[in-house]
Image (cartoon, rainbow, N blue to C red; front, side):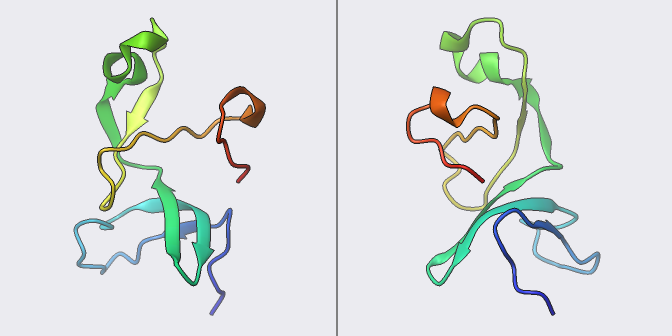
Length: 90
């Protein structure tokens, strides 16, 4: 078995019963002794980012559901870490 590592795609086992991860594909961003953090890539919501963050103007980028922890946060996967304070290279 391969140990999970940053930058890995995790595909849920088709027989997984946990509704939080049922049929998910997760981009693993961080995995260490304290826990793991990743983005669910295949649960698109019916919102675009401009609907949730009006300050962005007419910026029509899709939003994807995360969870099951910290559902009140918003994270961006982007190519310009120098443009957003606190950005972390994945």
